[in-house]
Length: 288
Image (cartoon, rainbow, N blue to C red):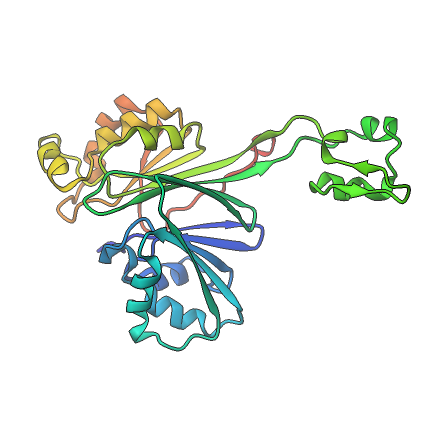
């Protein structure tokens, strides 16, 4: 009775989707969201429960006016997607593929700073940290002291480097204070615990992490199938110093996940159970 894996991030008019399991279209519609703003789709790996919803989603997105869609994923991304597109052959937009071939990759798209990091599953698999960076505050007194024309202020505040009419070069550092804390979300699933996850998740506002098994006696099974338990996820959240953790990707055999949450919170108090449609608005620190 649960949808398969997908998470959507929304920022500044753009949506980023991580994984696209069967039922993702229905889940998006049930939340009252739309497909048109989806500009980026990141894939953790290519097991069916993480990518099976893609052909239908692409067909639906073909009915929205768009010219390009960016996909990010492990090596083989273009081959896998094109194989799935046998049942979604004609699309009125271009797909741009970015394949991850190293243990880590960083890139910026549509204001998202994306950090992909290798994890430990039985196929090649990556987790993702997504950050919204935040520049320092604009310092009016510094701008005036440097005799920077006011017409340049807003563009400098947005990070542009400008040349004045007399050839003087103005940079954002001349008018901005130190960078402020941004917003960070880390997502990982289908993996054993790894130090790469702890390092990538450090200081995250939200850590969405697989908890395949809640029963302590299933640790052996978790190790066998390269998954993890609630308690291993909580330990990583604690070591990474995240603000909040959501557990997700439960085994189909897990029917009363809430019964195990008290033990999880003994390790990491700010742990919560993920559920279909769960959402939160993450705010910049001084806007909380």
